[in-house]
Amino acid sequence: MICASYETFLAYEAQARNCLEFQPLLIPGQLQTEPYARAVTEQSFLALGPDQVDDLVEVRMQRQKRLCGDSPLVLDAVVTEAALRLQVGGPEVMRAQLRHLRRVFELPNVTFRVIPYTAGARAAITGAFTLFASGENLSDAAAFTEAADNTTAFRDEALVLRRLNRLFKNLSRAALSAQDSCELLERIEKELV
Image (cartoon, rainbow, N blue to C red; front, side, top):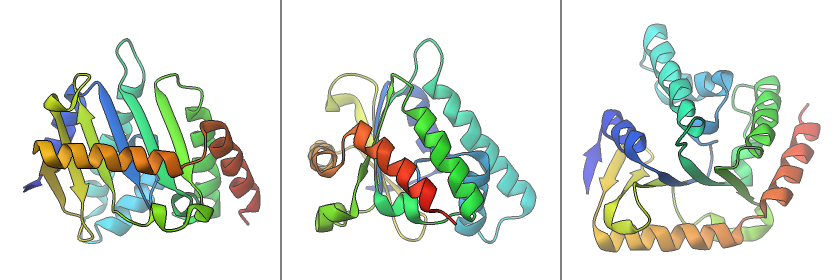
């Protein structure tokens, strides 16, 4: 395990054909609206100046282009219900973010599912992680795990990749279907005051 730079993460993402991502508290970066991304970045990196925040938000917005085009990234994202209920940026930002996520359901290469609170501890067993693969198997995969201090670790050991892939499958089984996840998004959006 080595500490990974954001540039390393972006390089793997640019080469990947498939991405599996689990986020317990935030919306995955490629699915964030600009105001949501700005609120996350401002809070995650308090020492950054406004220009640096602008640059990081722009990078995040550029990353979303991988979801469209001739050879789009296939993204399978699972989040917990907490990621939908934390009011990042306030109610207006969250309403727009939830509406954006509902539009994401229309993309054929994106799967987005939510683990509801009722799933209990099954969703509370791990932190955020992302698996990238450029082919069909794990032999060409790499994983990035996130720590509480905003550091990211690069993992490419076969045992770790198998474990994270199995963990993602278990988290996926705890998640609602795509349709039920979309309905939950709509309910949460209506509850925002």
